[in-house]
Length: 181
Image (tube, rainbow, N blue to C red; front, side, top):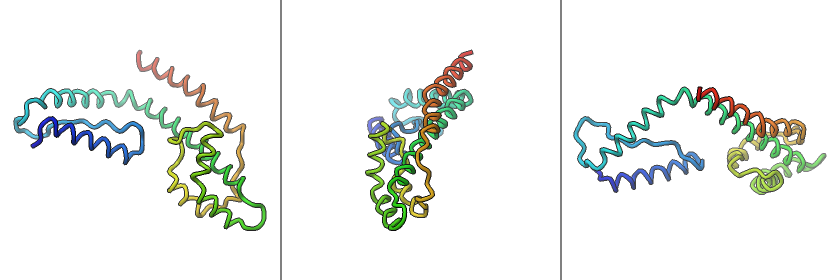
């Protein structure tokens, strides 16, 4: 049995650990409650548990409404990730020699992927959170043929930028209008 102070410490440690696991600035919501049929040992927790239960039920009821918003956010995340991938692939392609020493250069580029990420961040003003995990990216690049990578296609990147700048805003506006009516 833990009192309210210990409960808050456990909650804080859990949220900190979840932040490390999910690698996002915002962790998932964690609800606190008592799930047994016995009376509470510390009545000070009753109000907290009731409020948390109310929040949980309200969030469950809002799931259908929030599904479209989650899909829209997922679309944004995927578009930004596709754009970042395009920049990474183009930068790797640029670094490859035309004739000899391709395998050695490929290994150098993979080893310097962190510097490539930093350069792309500066050149294109992209936040670090939009980049794929560097360890996984290095693993995937081991079997890739960099010579077959495409260079940047500015027209396609412009289409993605326009979609993120204007179309997503229009979708969001329509979504909020539909939700509130």
